[in-house]
Image 1 (spheres, one colour):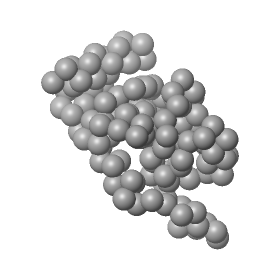
Image 2: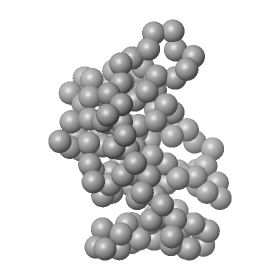
Image 3: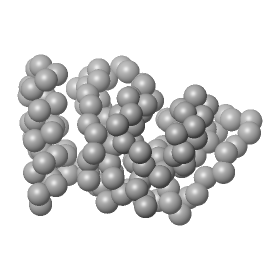
Image 4: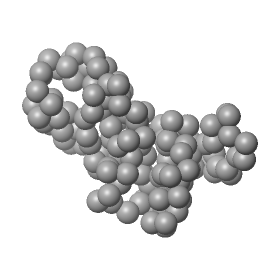
Length: 139
């Protein structure tokens, strides 16, 4: 079963957004300023892929995103925010698979240049993140 798992890594006013496959291998990566919300990058990153399910945390719980996922035939596995009046059912056995993307980000943090963001330009930092992702995939 193909799954897309969304997550972002914030550090030094930059967020790394990644969509990972079911085994935690990165499929799509993007970088935004640290003050941008995580949910703003969900739809653009999902644009080029068609997973069966989208696993994400409560930060991605928005009616607009959930409706868009359902329209595309993607099962949203996103827990409802605590302040929601009507809670959506969530398959928590599938939601536990989100740890694969957490492991990917932990591996990405092992690269000092990524963790400290030595690169000043977005393009070179994105290239460094992509290069580190390739090294992670090869190991």
